[in-house]
Image 1 (cartoon, protein in one colour):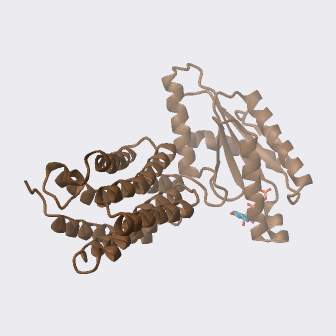
Image 2 (cartoon, rainbow, N blue to C red):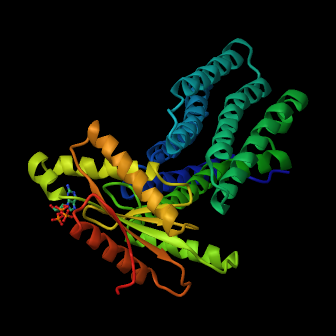
Image 3 (cartoon, rainbow, N blue to C red):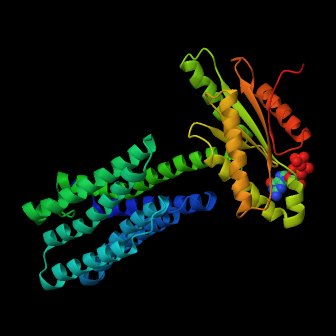
Length: 388
Ligand SMILES: Nc1nc2c(ncn2[C@@H]2O[C@H](COP(=O)(O)OP(=O)(O)OP(=O)(O)O)[C@@H](O)[C@H]2O)c(=O)[nH]1
């Protein structure tokens, strides 16, 4: 029973790999630089095409040349998927492992072709570096992947590939050439051929899905943060505030008490004028880090632009909010005694107890308190009070 013609299958697989390679290189150009590894995957599929191209020369050129080159290219292509995923997750690419896998494949190929010709032994030998690479892919994904559908799909593709290659390797040893030779008619051979042909493009689709998921997350984060300091921007702060309000509602807290600090650096213009805008930027970045270090995990810090920072303090009354403001001022004083140009901060505090008050109204009250702190001489803390 001859189910599939190997040449046609390999040709189709090569065409799919070529298309996916172009897709991955195209995606690389459009993705932000933080998302790495796509070019490795593009190259990996291009190398798979080359490998298939070499296999096509079987019968025209001697096996002693075609098989080692095609198989080493096949391992190299798989390995580039591994280095691509390593780069994608911020690890150093394992070039040595890849070099070792290629060398191992070449040595086995040459030995079982020229010294002790044995097809089954070649299949078993080749399954080892490919399995090693697949296991590394899986390990990387399990350690770094987010629990999302994209990760599940990608992981499933790797598992199918790993199992298939490993089973074929073992079958080569236990059942010999007849069962694993794709040129022989048979269900297992045809199944292996079909799945193996689909694997590289399917793996690439899985990787692309994971990459797009990451891109979505990155853009979401970017749209919610201040590019200079990395803390939240107005949009991100609005979302953090809404989440906090929803949490409080869920917990049915009757008396909702949260506090807002409006922290504004005093005479910041002078720092810019005296030390330059770049130094002013450095001060803003340091101050953002410093305020962040004075806060709890549940607090939120934002910069809406300029030299003003807004702090959201959930479950915090006026007294505790003033204590946090004092800590911020103390840390700023310490930083100015060290590496920062001398600067102080005025802080306005507003406490929200009315569950129906809007964020805008709360911000307005914190700003009024801040204005009073400026009016009263700066480098001080004022709490919003109802006008007499
Ligand atoms: N370096 C830098 N400066 C900024 C940035 N955004 C705003 N500024 C500067 O911050 C300064 C704010 O000046 P003002 O509004 O007069 O406030 P101030 O000098 O701090 O005085 P008071 O707030 O009244 O104490 C201006 O010089 C702005 O150019 C920024 O992103 N980077």
